[in-house]
Length: 356
Ligand SMILES: *[C@@H]1O[C@H](CO)[C@@H](O)[C@H](O)[C@H]1NC(C)=O
Ligand SMILES: *[C@@H]1O[C@H](CO)[C@@H](O)[C@H](O)[C@H]1NC(C)=O
Image: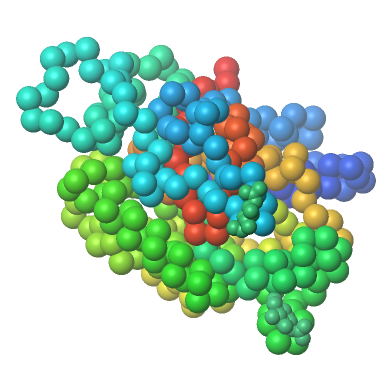
C-alpha cells in the first residue's frame, strides 16, 4: 500500500474508514483521493485497498489455537493465564508434512523442525499463497492499567480514561510502570532461552512496534539486549524495529491511546525506523469517538497486507502492541479469542491467499 499510494491519500483513506457514517466527508475524501492520486478514480471501491489477501490461521501447530487449551482460568479475581513459558511458546510436538524423508540422524529440536517446515512452504505452496509466523506481544503494565484496575472498568471507561491523570498519576500515552519494565525484561529472558541452542526458535526478521510509549519501552527492553546480530540464517540479522501507526491501540477518547508527536518518539528511540508518512501530530485520535471493532480491523488488515505484500519480507515477524491490537489480529485471521496478560506473548501461524 505504501508503495502504491503517497502519504496523503493513505491518511485520507484511513480517515474515510473512521468516518464511514458521514456521506459528506466520504465525498470530500474521494475528491481528495482523485485530486492527489492520478490513477485513482472517485468511483473505485476503496475497500479493495486493504483487502489484498484473505487470512487464515493454520490449525494444528500451536496450543493457543487448540480449542482444548484454556487461555485463562475462569477465576476473574485472580486470573491465571496460559503459561507459554513452560509450553515451548505453545509449539505442539508433532511431525510435519515436509518430513516424509528419513529423519535427520542428528536430532533436531521441535522448533528447528518447524522452521524447516516453514521454509519449505514457499516452494510447496500454490502461487498467491504464503505463510508467516507472528510473535504477538502485549506491552508490559502501563500506568493506565494500574488506574483502570484502581477505578474499575466501568468508572474508567465512563470517566477517568478521558482525563490525562488524577493529580498523583498521569496516564496519557501511558509509560510503563516498573512492574511493566520488569515484565518486558522477563519476556526477553524467555526469548533468550527460546532462541538459544537448546530450543532454536527462529528469531524474527522484522519487528513492528506500536508508536505508543509503552510499546516502544517494551520492545526495547525485550529485544534490545538479546544480541541478535550475526546469528545467521534467513531473516535473523539483528533487532531493527519499525514504528508503525496501524498497530497502535484502539483509537479515541482514552488519553492513554493518544500518541506523542513523532519528535518525542524519535527522541525516545533515535536508532529505530519510523515508517514513511508518519505524521508529526497524532491526526487519528479523536476525543469524541472510540474506534469500533470493524474500523480497527480495517487497519489491522492494512498492516497485515503491508507485511505480506512486501517483497523479501521475513517469514517470522514480531509485533509489539496492545490487547486491542492483538484481539483485532485474532479476529482478522480467524483465530479464537486468546487474552494475554500485560507483558504476555503468543505465536500465530498465518496463511495469506492473494485475492484474484
Ligand atoms: C479465585 O481465586 C481466589 C484468590 O486466589 C480464591 O480465594 C478463590 O477461591 C478462587 N475462586 C475459585 C472459584 O476458584
Ligand atoms: C490516582 O490513581 C492511582 C492509581 O492509578 C491511585 O493510587 C491514587 O491514589 C489516585 N490519586 C488520587 C488523588 O485519587
